[in-house]
Length: 220
Image 1 (spheres, rainbow, N blue to C red):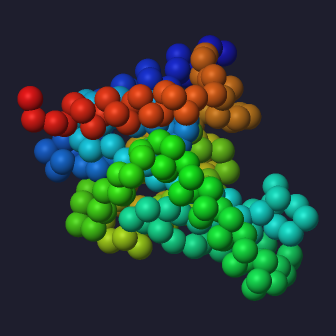
Image 2 (cartoon, rainbow, N blue to C red; image 1 turned 180 degrees about the vertical axis):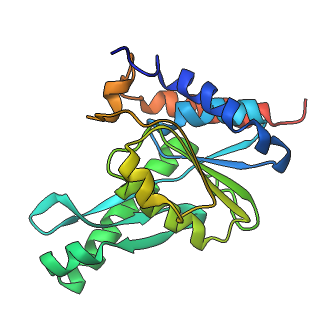
């Protein structure tokens, strides 16, 4: 079977068409870096919308960093989201959780500064907010992102992704006001399997696209 999308930019343009009805609400587009940024850039450009980053970092379990005990969300959506089921199994100490949260928040701050310099996160409260990534695998990270943004009191919260497994979308139903997903391949395998080009998005591309998106909104 041919891949569903050529690359992230093409996926973003197709998503922008599906989201065109939201242009009049002047939405805020929040991209999960790094792969979500090229997708979100095309949406922001088509909707003449502001673009910002929404960084989420997994909290690793003691001795097993690949096992997520939760996640932290940055910026105006700053929030700690714990996975109670994993916490119950792993039983990390409160000191460990605090240290892991601190470590991941420092990494978020380092990355935000690298991408945006001293720019502060764009306020979310009262806005129509569209969270964008290049795809969903299990839904754990995006669920933390949604919870963080929802706590910041947007007027409306939309999740927009090119593709996701049907079961992940079902898990996310009710977590936001609307989900826009272009494809639910079966079998799913992995996000990258459905792109013809799925190179790692470089930091330099993230910085360039954010700069271009913000420049486009400046008065001419």
